[in-house]
Image 1 (tube, rainbow, N blue to C red):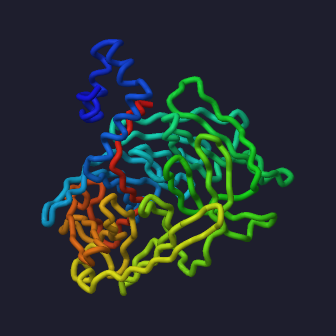
Image 2 (tube, rainbow, N blue to C red):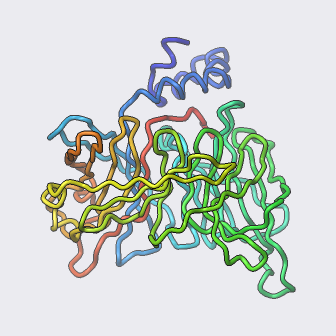
Image 3 (cartoon, helix red, strand yellow):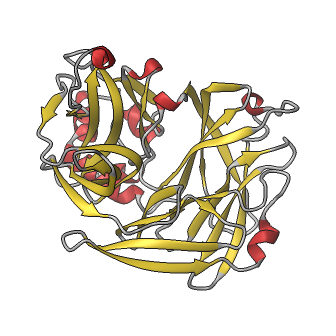
Length: 372
């Protein structure tokens, strides 16, 4: 097991065919949890989905291992093409797993970027339309679950009915959707993230759904909790993990480089701590105006080393490679890492008058043995 846990996922996938003993060992839950821990020490991976302005229905999904060395470029690998309508959005990566809606929003699929395998999840017992879906991981039992808010397809033609939450456990072929109790009626609508077995997301709460709060969903107990959200002036928001805690940050970085983080200190007492960082003036020099308008960079994540990860949201021409920026708040320093293989890819070739947009971007270190 000590040797196996250090092998890449693709190698372990091939070992499944060696014998039943090998297959049983690799698929054991204790080994899968051991592998997750080991893979957390590997280099960061960046997952990016782009859209073309002339083809808004498709998303082009790439991944790359980010280097930590100054001046060394990383190489992106094309993963797949999937639908990327507003009704087919994907949830953030959990250990390289992505859950996204299929056409018309009536079904869900899960893609494992490590094994490059994808499955379609079971249909709902009652034909339902998907409002929102979330992916979470329970580190105690070592299971992944999909949380989904649904309503009947005939919703707009019948009397008003409350949507229902349903949960599906991945990895069991006999699993089916299970309706769970929602003790706090709410409507998910914003960013989401899974931290230590808890899925956090913004939602509209109250009888009239006018108040905005942060909801938490315990993946193991399948219970909801409401957390009062601080008053935020930022419109575009992203949830990230900061020093092991939930934090909310503005999704777009302004030209002046000011970054505000609201860190959840105590979920029970609804206590948040505001931290403000100002990127060094050097950051404007690191931007490439040929690939992105000045200031139009998205805050992606905070690495385990404490660096902020930023990425441009537009691609203008095919010549320069795509890039990400690292900001170290302790040293107040920045570095630029280029990612080859994206702007050069045939599916994202530049067409005069049409831009390429960053649709989704996630960062992760951990690989999953969920073969699906």
